[in-house]
Length: 267
Image 1: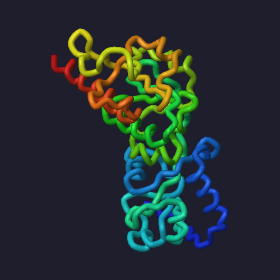
Image 2: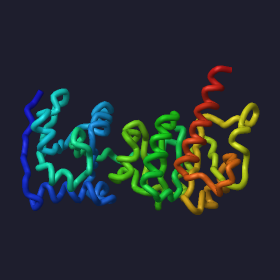
Image 3: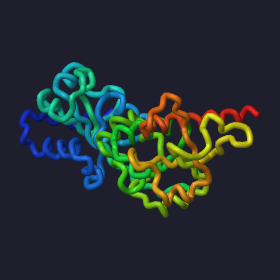
Image 4: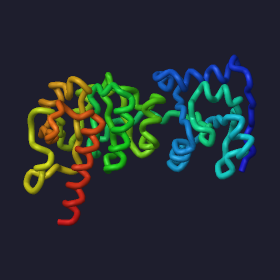
């Protein structure tokens, strides 16, 4: 294992720290820099497990002194920050005070045949990250984000995704026309019309693979996508609330697809 090049930084005005601070705080910086910030042990290990290459590792001084180099991985460069400086980047717990800077992969094209989630102007970063977690958990391989959706690789979405990013084909800034190249059945979520999800069994079972269309938190799926959908589905809400949060609705719908696929395999 190569010995990393270690730079210790104690000044908040250090140019390398200033550049890192922009990458951590600016939701669009990853597009300009072509790099991502991953923070905490879980995210860093998830990236390494998928073969991502670390450009630079960052440790709080207390963790670096306690544990030394990441002994089970080869790290090319390490930035060690005084704890107060690291806390200015991230409020991680003491045993988690580390992060990686990794290079952003080349943007993929949409694969028309994959089980997909289409995000139509879903703006809340927490919702987007949660949807990505559900997509990865329930066997969907691709997420297509239409323009107006929170950046899939922005720091808040990456944190909320908890490693799901590394298991998915992610396409950003797509148009409606881009989404319509999908050759799998399109299923639109709706709060007021369509088949009841819990009744989608037998001849009306959910198809696999498919593409779920998930819309803006307030406006839902836009008309151009609704018109293209082969099916509309709604979730029963006997409690009487107006609608589910989009991330909660996604988890319910994507699980229903995974369950329908499991039933097909056993018949």
